[in-house]
Length: 110
Image (tube, rainbow, N blue to C red; front, side):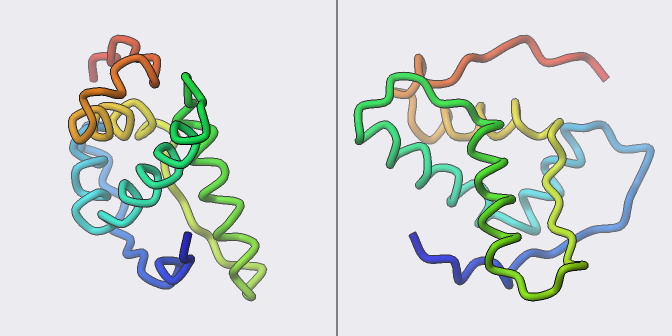
């Protein structure tokens, strides 16, 4: 997996009147590579025989990789944990055959 994507993240101003889903959509619009990376990571685990994958685990590995490849100790890469269920659903929309890979829970109303 290439880590060239590390310099490609864009951020948007904090907006408090947006729902989590709206914030996720905006973050994904600005950073589509995040879903692609999570997809690659999940695919790699599945191809190695994993039957279940935790999206939050993948997000933490993504954060760790970013921190390890960033020279600036003050660099702050953020993916909101509340986006995890949205990423799971996005990956499932791309790969319907992964229906049993991620555990889906009901989204909390906002």
